[in-house]
Picture 1 (spheres, rainbow, N blue to C red):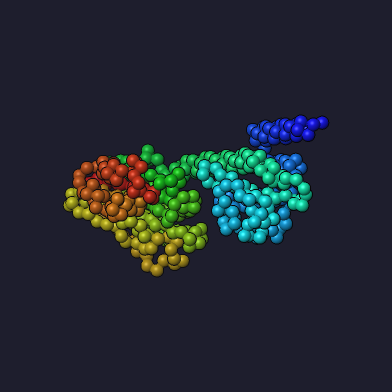
Picture 2: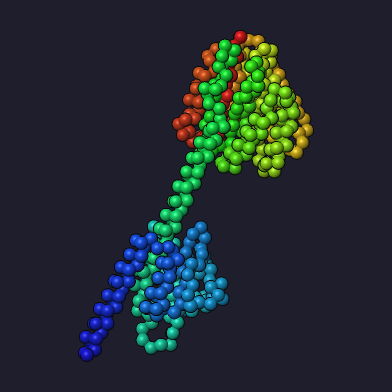
Length: 412
């Protein structure tokens, strides 16, 4: 056969092989083959069909990892550092004369870029460098580049897809956790609302789950207890500790057990659960309809504001101790009490409400709360005004923590 005709037939066969190979790989990708299966096919094509002797692939996924090694010794692999040796190559490079002797055992570096970011580096080399004729690494270089890009981008897409599935699963778990946590917060319909008091509340977690909590417990027909609490930190760990705290509080908060004893036992249990890594601040109180006495303990929490409407007096309820879980034993433990004989309002809150930072980096503090509370308007109206002014429900960028509020109006 005429040499020219033979060469044309060979070129046609090679072109047909390459097209069929790309078609086969595309079908394999569409068939959702795993990363391992795609790499196996890639290695087979290069080694068996194209006679490429040495292959290394480094791919980025949080850090650079070797995902394929074929025909290379462990010693060679150990001496290659992606950041130092490969990141500077943004296009196909011939490295047979590289100043790095480790890279000289290869012929080419093929960078794979996705969205202008390098996601992989393919190193190829001819195992039989003394053989006559054109090296397969040169002869098939652009086809190998095309194949490498297709395979690496497919593997990256598999990773992104799997990550999105994980994120979706996490999102659903967080939604479920959020629903379960919201069940720990008492519904407004069960809060005290009679001719003696009116209770109004507000709850706004910064994330799907939060570390804020409040509760009301009817101790007997004439007495009820309540608390508002805040776990240090945010997220799932804070929510889990708060759930545990809620169970302990409900078990301990009875008519018979004094507040100071409840605090001691809560501190022991929070220390056992959090092991000193987190703490809980809380304000806990009991109120008697008969005696009209409010007894309370402030355990490192933001002092609630008490406003006597008739006397136009504002008090901050500070008596108490350090937060739960801060110390093995509480050094000083006090309780406070108020006899409420005139129409008054109590405003309890978590620190997310006052630690909002404005554009100048200044926290808002309690001035707005005091201003909104110091009037004859009902507590519901006061809370609504504060929430509106602080833009709590408007994706306020200054908010970076959970916000909870308990407002109680005492009638004369």
